[in-house]
Every structure is written in C-alpha cells, then in structure tokens.
Amino acid sequence: MLTAAKNPLVTPSVATTVLQLVFLALAVPAPAADRTTLLVPLASDLVTAELPDGVYADQAMGDAASDGWKAYVRIWQAHHQDPADPTIRRFLGLPLTQSFEATAKRGRSSPRWLGWRPGSYAQVDTPHFVIYSRADGPASKRVAEDLERCYWVWTQMFFPLWEAAAQVSGIVEGLPSDQSVQEFLQDNSGRITIRRKLRVVLFRDAEEYQQTLGRDIPGIERSTGFYNDEKQTTFLYASEADDAATRRHEMVHQLFREATRSALGRDIPGDQSGFWLIEGIAGYCESLYIGESFATVGGWDCSRLQYARYRMLVGGDHMPMAELSADGRTDAQQRQDIARWYAHAIAQTHHLLDGGDPGHRGWVYDQLAERYKIRAEIPGNERSLNFDSVDASIRRFLSIDDLHIEANPVHRPLHDLVLAACQVTERGLNLIPPSPHLRWLDLARLPIGNEAVVRLIPDAASLEQLTLEATKTDAALVETLKNASSLRELDLSWTPLDDAVIEAVSSASEMSVLWMTGTNVTDESIDIIARMRNLTSVDLQRTQVTAEGIARLRSARPDLEINPLQLRAAQPQSP
Image (cartoon, rainbow, N blue to C red; front, side, top):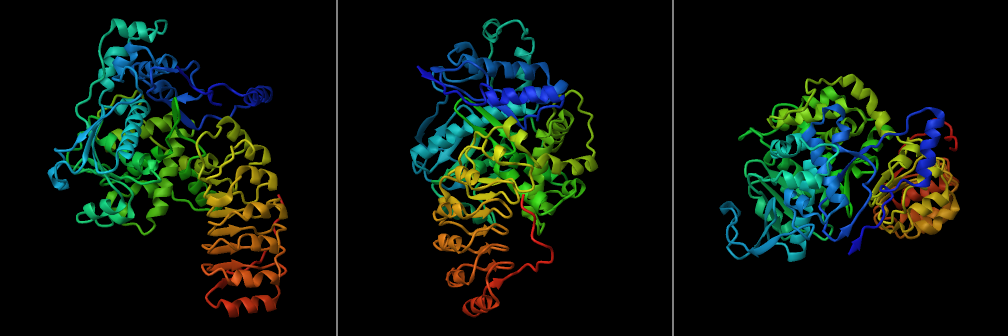
C-alpha cells in the first residue's frame, strides 16, 4: 500500500494561514489563484485523503459551469479520495488496479503514406490513442502514459467542448449534493465511450523525424513536433530531454480537432482570423504540470510567462489585441515578428483564462467553440471582450509580488525565472524552492542580496543567462559563478563586483554578451575578456577600466562591440 506524500498545495501552511488572517484584518482580498487544479488517474493502491487546494475548472467558470461539468469534477475528486473504488474506475474507463495501461505489439497497420514496413515499428494502444513508434520501449511507454494523463486533465479543463460531455452529463448531472458519487454510480450504470482513438507517430529521433517529414513539410527541421490537420496525426520524436511541452502543445491541437464534435471538415481552425487563440491555447497548455496525484495548468511560474514578463515589463513591448486577433493562419505564419506574435498570443491566453474574470474565461471557451465549429452549450455565452480593457490589464497580470508568490507556490521544476520589474523582495524569493536546473534568471533591480540568489541556484552549471543588474549582490557571489560554465549572457551592471568575477566566469566558453557597467572591474580583466572567443558585446562604462585598457581591448579584439549603449543618465539608485 503506497501513501501519497503530502504536497504543500494539499494542506495550507502556517504561513499561508497567517497571510489569510492578515488579509482579513486589512479588509483586502487575498491574491487569487492563477492556475487551475485538475486531477489525474491513480493506481488503486495509492492512499489519498484531502483534495489539493486550488480552483477547479468548473469553479473558475462561476455560474457558467453546467451541472454535468460540476458532477464530472466531483467524480474525479471522489476518485482522488478513494482510488480503489471500482465503480468510479469503471465509469471513467480506468484499469481496475493501475493508473495507466497500454498494449504493445509488432506494428503491421500503420498508415500507408508513412511508408513503414510491417514489423519495423511497434504499435502501442491506450484507451484513447494509437501510437506507431520506432522509439525504444521505455520511451514509447513514457509518451503513451503522458498522453493519457493529458487527455484526462483536458477533459476536466474543457469539459463543455469534449465529445463525451453530453453523454457524461446525461448520466451524472442529476447527482444529488447529499449523495456519494459511489452510491450514485452504482444506481446509474454507464461508462464513458469515445468515437475513435487519436493517432500519434513517434519517430526514433530528430533525424528520422526530419528525413520522413521533410519531403512534404518545408521547415520541419525547425520544429520539435507537429500536428497535421489533413492527416489528423500528431508527429513526435523521442529524445533524452523528453520535450513534454511540445508534446502537449501538439496534443492540444489534436484534442480540439478530434476529441470534440468539431464540424470543421477539411477547414483549418483560425484560417481567416483569430488564429492567435489556436496557437495561444496550445501554448497555454505547455504550462501543464502533472504531479503524483494532481495537475495544474497556468501559473506565474510557467516558462512561457517568463518570456512574456521580460518582453512586456522589461522591454516595454506591447501588441494590441486588435492587431493580434486580426491575423488568420497564413498571415500570422508570414509575419516577420512571428516569435513576438506567439509570445503575445500565449500571454494573452494566460491572462484571459487565469486573470480571475469568469467572463473572460467564458469568452475563450466561446471563441474556441467558434473557431473549431463545436456546438457547445455554455450558459451566458453571449459574451464580448473589451480589447482596450484587456490591453490595459495585461501588465498588471504579469507583474507579481511576494504575496502572489505565497498564494501560488511553486511546485514544478523551474528552468526560467524572470522577476525583473516585479515587486518581489528577498522574502518572496525565499519562497521559491532551490532550482538547480535554471537556464535563465533575471532579478534585475530587485532588493535582493547574495544569500537569496545562492539559495535559489545551488548549482549554477546550467545557467545560460543571468541578470542581477542593480541588485545588492557583491563579491561573495563569485564562488557560485565559478560553476557557471554554460553562461552565454551575464549582466552584473551597477553592482560592486570586480575583477574576481571576470576570472570566475572565464571558463564559460560560450559567453557572448557581458554587461559590467558601473562595476569595479579594472584593466586587469582586459586580457581575460579578450580571450573570450565567442564574446560579441561587452560594456565597461563607468568602471575602473581606463581609456588605455579599452584601446588594448580594441586592438586585441577588433571584432568586439565595446560599450554599445551610450550612457546619459546617472547611475541607477540601489534598490
């Protein structure tokens, strides 16, 4: 018998309880949950008790959630509390003991257009997917299990659009509030059925993926996964990194197209306009975190929002909703700023779904139903969206503070973290678990010192980009930076760090951008900087480097851009 480890989301911490009392005393609302809580299939011998804290999908819709949706979420909550109950497992179509089951056999019936010889691949069948795979057994099983879990959380999140919503509602929407789920299902027999399984092709590696698809799909080498509307197939490849974000992005395209009653036929969703939401919702679902017994989607700490936070709050970039929503598929894909377009599309999708306004969330559901031509009954679906209001509030949504971090704790591994331009102090930073796999960390101008930074990055080996501009960090940070051998960009401007830090990062062979503006670096660092062969830009203004030192650097590295930004303002004030 296994016992699920307690998660901080299950039982509120003392700190959270104190925080709630403070809000009551001040008569101000507590920060809202910025993510949706969902539940996953469990093995029958996993013992659970309390439900995870958080906002469930039906609750987030307010009065617009149907009785059938509420009852469906109740069934998943009952499964969480009693995973062994066979009545619930039978209704959901879960195996009676395992959380997941799949069968694998030598493949002999792959699509003809794939060109695979019988027996040269495996066919893996799960309750909702058929996977034609040339990857090894463990990789195929890992992908199959993840797809099944993603399917179930998607049905909870987007219940009104799901093909089985009417079927499920017909069975369970009469579930009385004072009757247990188990008793109700015993008296109301039935189980969820689907029309057909979804098709996935899993290649051995990136090379096979590119060689096979490159004949018909230009630019496939720049992708890591692809859903083909015409063939109604998701194409993926196995890798050591196991790119779950791409898999979930493409799977969501497939689910909205094939696990709904979509009447698109041969049409492409968003082909004429509104394509931003087609990509926005897929990018939003990259934020899906699946834990041992529950999942969340959304959240300030997901990677996509770090890029949006930097782009909008630090860089001042803004794309109005009117511009974003005007493009159809072809126009969007031909944009010169396509990466920027994607960033805004995904950020606005997060904003509308997780900004705390049920009307905004309902508008997203309505738009998805319209774009995919799904007949869905969502109460109050005559909604409109004030683009000006949305444009005005996106920055507030992205800017977080200590209280927001405390109300929405981190439980996923962090690879990117941008808190620049936010109201975060050491107290808030100390609420974030140590993150040894961070690639990008930007804490510019926050009132934080060495201790909080070192605690957050106990191992700097994976860091590729680090910005600590105008923080209270000092020479004690040098020991941590000695391990930052993967650094490509480093900004320590307006800190008291000196030549020791240049020596510490000299082993970062891929360093390309170095900002040391306003530091205590001297001419002693010139030779080390000159030897950084991949360095393309360095700023040494307002340092102790002399004119002679700059001349020596120009002579040694005529290809190097030196002092690219002409300073006119005084030194920034310390936080």
